[in-house]
Image (tube, rainbow, N blue to C red):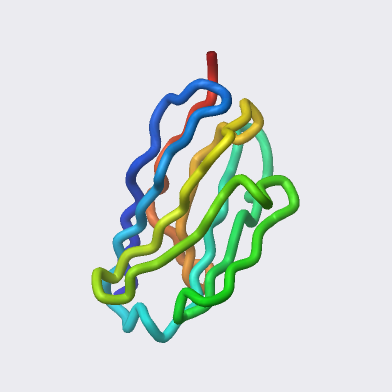
Length: 112
């Protein structure tokens, strides 16, 4: 059974940084590309980034490109998302996702 556990969210001021983690289990982590998605209050789920199975290639939504960096550690079965230069509009619940399966999420709130 796929199990994804996100962590690392919190309250941060605009311009600040956070590093999110996603611990994966129940499948061969290194066999799959992984996504980060987010959902702000009252809004639809938004795709944020994808990273390939080896961690060589990442792609990003235009809204976060140049500010967020996705990475992974296939030994630790963990996915990461570095959030830099955070804006108030980045406030959302952030989820890691494998083929539509998500964890419980971690809340990121950007506010002064």
